[in-house]
Image (cartoon, rainbow, N blue to C red; front, side):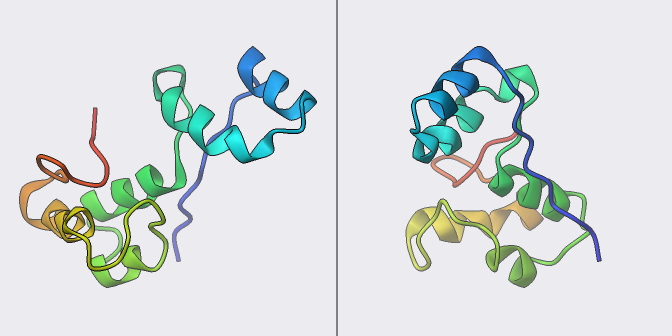
Length: 94
């Protein structure tokens, strides 16, 4: 068993979100702050998939940003084949 870890760093915007009780905005803050070292859960899962630590079927259980059956979700499968989600895919890698 290998953990997929979401990383939230206590930046000023994060403090403001929590102080204002708008915790529903934390996912967005994490996604837009990846350059500062934050990691969304979906990115962590995809990193494990890309490293071939987990299989696509297992990754599907934990990915939340793509609706099952959508073209974007199907692009998730291309990670195994191409190493990234490709154009229009669920998640991109830096």
